Length: 134
Image (cartoon, rainbow, N blue to C red; front, side, top):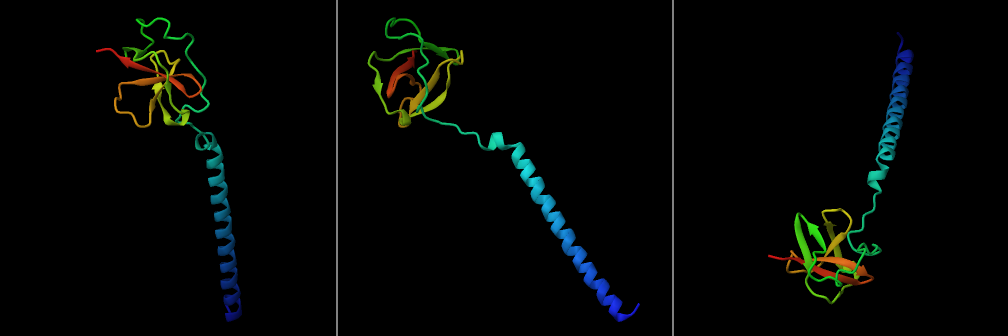
């Protein structure tokens, strides 16, 4: 093999290496885009941790029958703490979960001392305080 053929072979080897690297990189990018598109629903899921825009979920006003429990949370009945609604901006009410029947969304204020007290939305920026009885 002469020296000129050796240099040509070396140049072809580099060219094939660059083409192979480019092809591999293109495959890697395509595979990453495909994986991303498969998980798009999970990646772009938007959750709102506050009460903003949530509908009122109580079918009746619990202030009408004061002795009756309003809902059950973790097997414990919750009753009205006061008759007066709490005026609280909806962005300050954080979701903590739902009642045992999974029908009523429950909230707590951002800065709340007693964690046993839960809030139920009864209107825009209006909540009722519920508490368990000892």
